[in-house]
Length: 224
Image (spheres, rainbow, N blue to C red):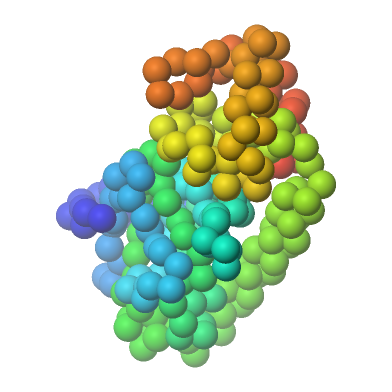
């Protein structure tokens, strides 16, 4: 994580997403512009959060670690999102891993400032309530996706969301999608044979995006 000392860029994000309108008091002098380079983590499970994060630019994936040590993909983040709301309300460590898949900017407010100024701010608390409601609906939808949709659909959504140039190991991707390594390989080979993607270095190049988007419809790609 890199702190960016550029008030002009930060103010542009604040105005673009009306961030200061979320609060009763002016919080701009407590805000920090933070850059996360590709593959860095905004937060990790069971680690303390030092900021309330407003995700303003970039792309990230959120996943949880199961009791058997494997990981399961929850969703992708893109555009404007609030991260750390539940953790700050309950004074508990992060409940998920959020890893950026491209360079990403967040605006952070230190947790001590949030606790000092915002936990009794009715306007802010209403916003958090709305945010948590959306996350609950998304969590319910994600559970259905992971249980009911074939691997081909979930993989198509993953490829679209990552731009087709993911550089994680295929073993890690198979865990995230809740399938076996062999099944993932078969599905990738099948997609290559159908002319949807082709192997390109360490990743895969999208050949037929139209068909991939149809396969990915109603999955992770629509949970941004």
